[in-house]
Length: 110
Length: 117
Image (cartoon, rainbow over all chains, first blue to last red; front, side, top):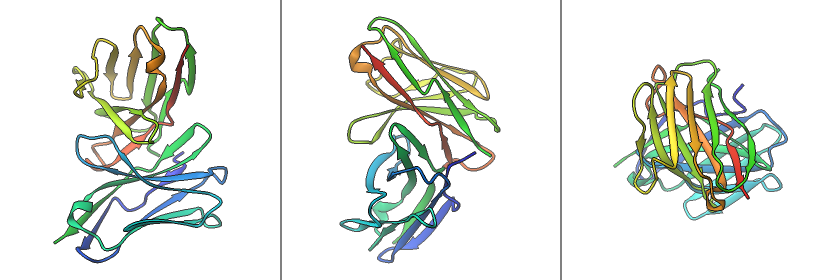
């Protein structure tokens, strides 16, 4: 069964507004969470991560929130820019075991 | 649904030997599978795109004779690392695309940790 789920296959946002990408996981043993950004014909590029001992990590326009009790992870991008348009994958890991969500395509409209 | 498995999850081999990694889509047909290699900064490098019944498309800089990819069925793709060397030690991840869902959606396997001694 999929241990990491991204239930929204796509999201469309206006430039300058906030983009919120969501991710749910089932295995409470995961202790490290990552977001990747993927452009066509390239591998996913690491974007931001968070350890399970934290509930928020911020890097510029990108903030990842972790709600362990809900087993929920979200990525906030603000303000959104057209260059942020890509497919975003969340991933959860423990030791060497890493599981990915299926991806959400974000489209930021000018 | 939409589960992708990889086997083995971990493998240790001697330098010069070959290692085969399997990637299977368990409950859907995957006409396209992707092979990635993870580097220390966590990003995944696309190595090749594997289409069922045809030759794999390799990314620039990836040696096709060293990393043999076979996609013989709609549920199985294999990556064989031939004459492995310590620099081939890495985390290899496959993903599969289910065309009935979306061209963006990829289901990732759990990865294979290869250590070459």
